[in-house]
Image (cartoon, rainbow, N blue to C red; front, top):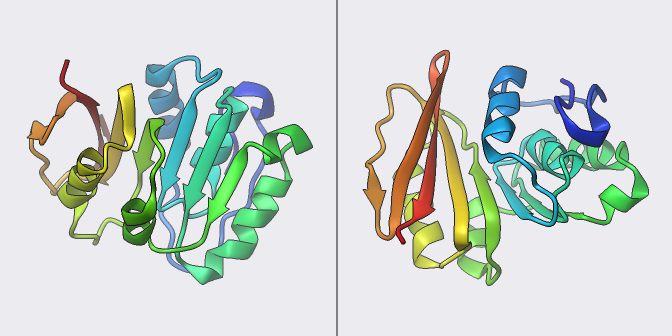
Length: 181
C-alpha cells in the first residue's frame, strides 16, 4: 500500500497479517480530495487496520490524529507504519489499541473528521454514527464518514447528523455525515 497525497505521497507502508480489507488507493485519494486541506484539523481513524488513513491524514496536514484498532495482530504493523513518518508527524499520531465502541464510550474530545472503516461483516454501522452524534464527537463543521458494503443501507439522518454526500467505489460506499445547521 502507498500514501496517495501530501508530504508522504508515494511512501510504501505495510499491510498487517490477519483479516484486512485495506482502503483502496482510489477511494482514499477521492475521500481526501473531497475533504480538502487538513491543515490544523483533527482526525479520528476508527478500525484503523494498518494505520493508512491516519498516516494519510497527517501527510495531508492534520495537526492531531488518533487511530483506534483492537486487533492485537495488527499492533506491530501499525506502530511500524507510524514509525515510517517523520518524527514531527509521529508526534501528531496517537494510537489506541482497544475496541472502537469502548473508545467512543470513553472519548471526550471533538474531531473535525472521523473516518469509520469497520470490517464489512460488522453489523452496527448506523449505531457507530449514532454514538458519534450522541457523544458530540464532531466539531460544529465536522464530518463523519463511514465506509460500508453497497448491500448495507444507511439512513439520510441519524440524530443531528445528516447525510451530505455519498460516493461509490466498486462494491463499497462512503457516506459523509455532518451536523445540521
